[in-house]
Image 1 (cartoon, rainbow, N blue to C red):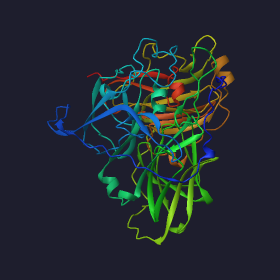
Image 2 (cartoon, rainbow, N blue to C red; image 1 turned 45 degrees about the vertical axis):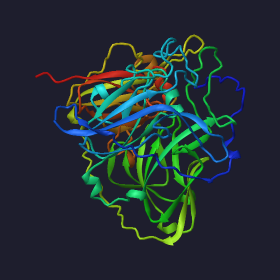
Image 3 (cartoon, rainbow, N blue to C red; image 1 turned 90 degrees about the vertical axis):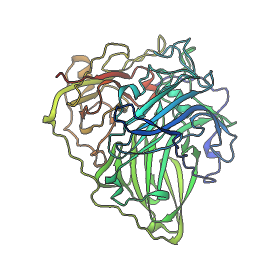
Image 4 (cartoon, rainbow, N blue to C red; image 1 turned 30 degrees about the vertical axis):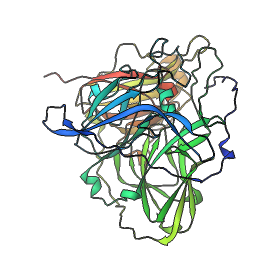
Length: 508
């Protein structure tokens, strides 16, 4: 997809000009509750209550750059990290304390970003959370500076790495680029019993690419069309890990567990260790896999997470780099001393029962479309060729299972995320897009391909390849109400590649 970019007045800084491995990898601050309050679910239980602000913040991304202005949850990027346990709910008041004016370029021609709306509006979505609809962060339920919303998260789900981020209609890509995201960890007894690396041996790695001006400020690309700055993708040359550029981490010669999130607007990462080191994946978006999967490369689309173990025992005294060719991300400095490793990596982790296709009560065929005409308007990134504001067409019944066939008619790979639910990937199959678009005929050109081994667990975001039908099977368990599904390339999401769906209660 080619859209001309406006000529930059000030060139972005070349990250290769900066010294590498001079800043230690920072750890997100752990959120602390203010008090306990009654849970709103009528259970009579009290739950922890947190108050977290969205506000302007300043932090250094590299030793040799001036401090960068961000928008952040709790004053840092990534924001404060929540630690909770399965079945233990919590209340969070998300307060909008942002400045009135946005510092990134709003495209007022996009639906939901019209002139006259508060520029610094926001709304918070817990990505991967099985959350009641009124706490899910519906994109049109944004609120302005000086206001807040209190959301209830029941956490009735397996242990997993979730994350929270802004979801405001029409400007989500800008708010996320500005820094409005953070981690949310759910734990449970089944995971505890495995003896995986924990405590200081469990490390979050939040990946995000950005561009910076020479004075260290965020630089977001704009198109060459006057009054229509939206661009279809935003790829940065500087790659932040936990908010730092080229950080290092001192590690012992033992196993470590890394909880990895791709928080980039649109970049896919293909992670590998220098020297061909082995990465063992133990979990995906929605928790543990049934067994560890050994990898040389780990691909993560925007919004996806991976739970991995790296054993540094055979690398005493070495320096290893985790990268995504041609980019280097973080350096591990392995101690020369032997370590006493009391952790384990079991051959079996957690049962993942595959859902039989016969359990599905309905199959929906849904297209991913692109009909750009940017000279006239910034529209055309669509799901099922249907704009956001059209009536809801997907209304699954609560506690039923459906198969969704995602038919990608575009030349892009789209990571598709469904709110509230978890699902399993069934298969992928190439098809003739020309026949489909011109004759409404689905003609397959390959046999079905099973999911990759590390996609055999529970997911909430799935990679839908170009000119491929990707099938997922979705149990709509949780809550009735209105949710959304969308592409997690944020520039696409902001330009109509998002649709509401409604989970309806079964008739008695």
